[in-house]
Amino acid sequence: MIALLLSARPAAGASLSRVELDILGKSLTFLQPKPVGDVTVAIVYADGDAGSRQDAQAIADAIGGGLIAGGAVLRPQLVNVAALNTAEFALVIVAAGANDEAVMRAARPHHALCVTGDLAAVRAGTCVMAIRSDGRVEILLNSQAAQIAGIVFAIAFRMMVQEQ
Image (cartoon, rainbow, N blue to C red; front, side):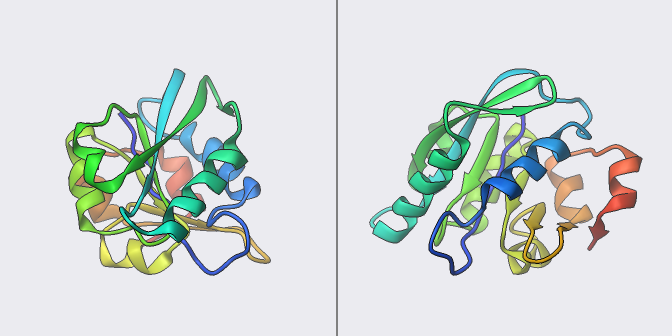
């Protein structure tokens, strides 16, 4: 399974833009094994944080009815961070204010990929991959966090990204 985490950076819209979500979709084709079929994306938000919930909804709206990722179709589902341990998911996107160790702990047993727009979260090891497209595309991969979660990317992908 794959978990995807997105953390917010100041923005009027979603913490990950549609462009960044499309980049995520292309990145997932380098996972080993590749996701296929309908893939539930848990978009995680912080309990009691209206801004976090609003960001989660904006991310879900950006994904819409489904985002094509190779042989997979990503289907969004909003999940409170407190309920993530009991949720069924293959990806987790973490909205503003919800990117912390609790999400990573919930994602690891699923061998889940954590993706965020927050480079600091990846550097700290609370997320596996960050995607940003401010001016240029930047993908940061925390190799140690990926290894702990059992996430494996093809060598061709790892050659294209910055590894921590």
